View (cartoon, rainbow, N blue to C red):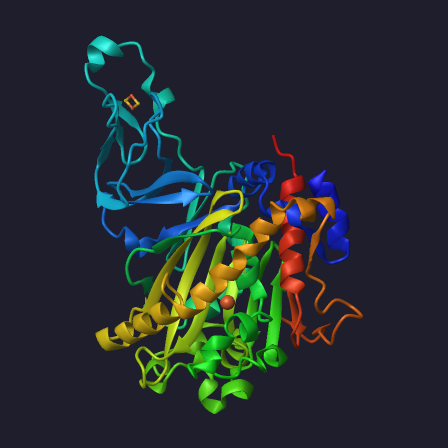
Amino acid sequence: DILARTRSELEKGLVPVNIFANADIFDAEMERIFAKSWVFLGFESEIPEKGDFMQRRIGRDSVIVTRDGKGEIHVLANFCRHRGTKLCQTDVGNQSHFRCPYHGWVFKNNGEWIGAPDKSKAYRGLDTRDWNLFKAPHVESFLGMIFASLDADAPTLMDYLGGAAWFMRGLMDLHPGGMSPMGPPDRYKVRGDWKTGSENFGGDGYHVGVAHGSVQTIQLAQGFDVLNNYSTHYVIPGGHSFLGHDFDSMFGPDGHVWYYPPDIQRHFDLNRIDPLLQDVVKKNPPIVGTIFPNLSFLRFFGPPSPGKPPAVYTSWRQWQPSGPGEMELWSWQLKWNFMDEQQAADSYAAGQFGFSSAGIFEQDDTVVWEGAPEAARSVWARKEKASFNMQMGMEGMGQQVLDTSWEGPGEAWRPGPGEPSQRAFYRHWLRQMEETGE
Ligand code: FES
Ligand code: FE
């Protein structure tokens, strides 16, 4: 079967094409990956007040993320227990209760069944505790980011993130005020597989000079042709990874700390993070990364408008599976909470210009990602038992080696080009898929 074949192919650094548009694989991913992992849902600052809620997703399931009257956060299945009608049909709001639009069952924002029309005539004998909304057994936050797991036996969020949490501090915790999104996530449909987004943002520096070549041609950025020479692939157990670049070598001394200009950098207190991480942030900061299964990080720079000096932008983005070979891309753009209005506006504009439904990088990426599911549907690919190649940098293949002096979490592979994070991502994907669970 496909999984057995994936296992033997992965040993060679290959991934069978079939896994990118297959209904059985997709269903198994929903059960064995999305219902088992810690999945990102949004930021605490998106629901700051008691009663605030937002509609989000775990895999393909719609969920309501609520803050109840005590301030506690709940993650509820967004369907009525009576006949399945979608309870919450708006993206965000403030409600103490959700009333079903079909027959009117009412649930509190902590999920409890609280009432129904003609309750005493209709349901005198109903044990209402059996009819509460389904509620995620585990909800935790880290750095203001809310995650939930539907798996009752899930490890803690910190155990799940493992070494990725260390890197996340380096990205988000350079100031006590932290970061927050500048609005709800942008959402757009992509005819690509969610895994492609995850593996690309986990460490595909190789495509930048080609897929994004036009960005360099029109002189919006430079250094793409040498980027792979200065990259470090941080590969972290659990399917997570980050891709760092030596900004100093690429962009000169101004490149320090993601090329943040001095008026931003002076706010950072690098002593908040440990010395090795400080070193990473200064010299090889991650520009992209992926938290398994479908959350990715992005921090890069560009001009907010033509002729203006570059501004640094940050996005956390999610590859939301919609069906085999189809996804929605959700992207939050974040600001440091210390930023003044102009700094935040510049960061936002630069980010939208690069990565948004109309963004130059985003369009480059999403269009080339359409190929994998197309190939997966191809009879010819099936006839040939085609696999994709993720062998770059494997032993005997290139110059990339494991940095044995690396003392941080996981492994550091350098210099690029290489695909160690892609191989690790699919190895972890396979491990999850082979766990039969219930
Ligand atoms: Fe919700 Fe009937 S489906 S009350
Ligand atoms: Fe890209």
